[in-house]
Amino acid sequence: MSSKESLKQTSFKCEYSLFLRLEEEAKKANTTKAAIVRKAVKQLLQHSVDEISELSKKTSPYSGSYVVLIKLPESLVAQLDAIAEKISTSRSNLIRTALASYFKLV
Image (cartoon, rainbow, N blue to C red; front, side, top):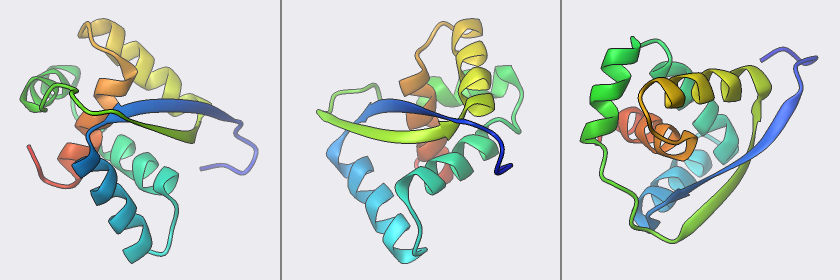
């Protein structure tokens, strides 16, 4: 991430199990949850829109109650929003999909 790129606060909802996995990974890597999410989102964005759509369909639908607040580069948020619109889903769902893919849960 460029040091000049501005960050945008965003949030996503997830189940407790995914939240714990994210927290554990951040501790293990001695980094922040936001850094893990950025890495997961960047990996997801390497896929085609069709592949992301299929991964999104395989991700468990939201049924949890945890809201995670993080800051992401505006460019990543814009890319997530564009894909979310193309495949008729939410940014929150794409972030959950990115994490599920990153943790090899799908």
